[in-house]
Length: 491
Image 1 (cartoon, rainbow, N blue to C red):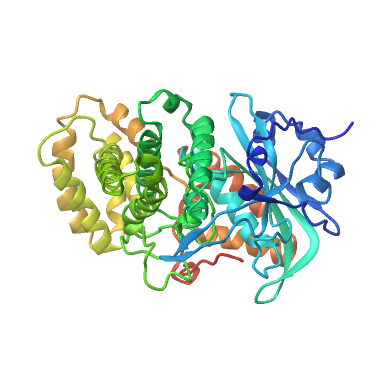
Image 2: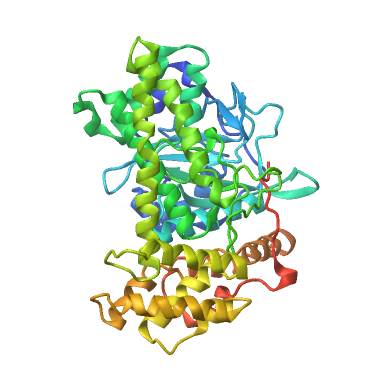
């Protein structure tokens, strides 16, 4: 028996300018450290076979499976606002595509699989730490119900990579609806290759938005669809306190999935200006800036599509601006609706928006933990005598003043207290990938080859909305000496 991947590749059938054909670089001694068995089965793969030595060799890039057509995708991108005309997959290779059990086409990509023509003098490898971080956070995002790329497997290579020091090498097998980015369109637009832009747009519509082929103006409709998905995605990020960290246009997915978990992190104490990325010195991608940056990125996509809108530049620009204008409302509706659910409001009344904003302002002023404040509000919704949330505030009186108004408002809702609590707990997670927990897991793996903490963290995060008393300590925020103030890309 051999490991079988039912590949049905479409991107590699596009013109050669879209990618470079390149095989993964073999590694010395691949060893599987984690297989996502449920995801493997969903993809139509045999988990038992993937857990064999042969499977580990495929997941490490040492062996290329039958039917694969390995490529490194070409793209450009604005990185921290500065345009780079050629980036591309410098350390990732797309093995191919499969149709999953729901009939959806999925990319299977190896990340850290060796140099490609786009590596720009890099080694094309990945260190173990960033591989584990992406596995943990992407699967946590999936469990939280947020559109995301996913992690099929993590493999150590038996080799070291050199960053600030020598680190264990690893490969992540990443699964996505596609790896097409805003930067993919920019790659062709900057070269004035309008036919390639059109070909790419047609491919995206066919793959992600097939109903748009029936639209009167399909390319306009495509921009509108991507705008809507990105607006809703970023709203979901904010509602769980997620900071992407590196929202470059080459990290902005056309499918509306969260992609490229580099210096990402979840907030502990609520701070709209929170930045974790060590390279974001100006706070461009701070927590509260993420909606604005998403719109900025979408505007770059619109610029690429202008030649497909009209031969008349002014007309094309006006039409694009009209479509982009929908972002703010779409985001605001999704975000405000999410906030209302988080505090247990399911009808609309005057003053609700102010009530929500007053809570956020008090949380920021009092360094209240974002996740626990909302989770404990759910407890208080079920039992008005429960006041655990006030302990999250440096000045508990600030919470008491707000809570009085909140209880008065929720008393006007039609739900019972138990129904309200259940509804709030369904949208307010108990558990997130706390940065200090992720770092502890990485250190155990890197320093001691100990993956038990990693396994436990992944298991716990698969059920973020459940109380899980046996894992209660994982909900705790970090102690002062445990705080993670900076995160790193790992490249």
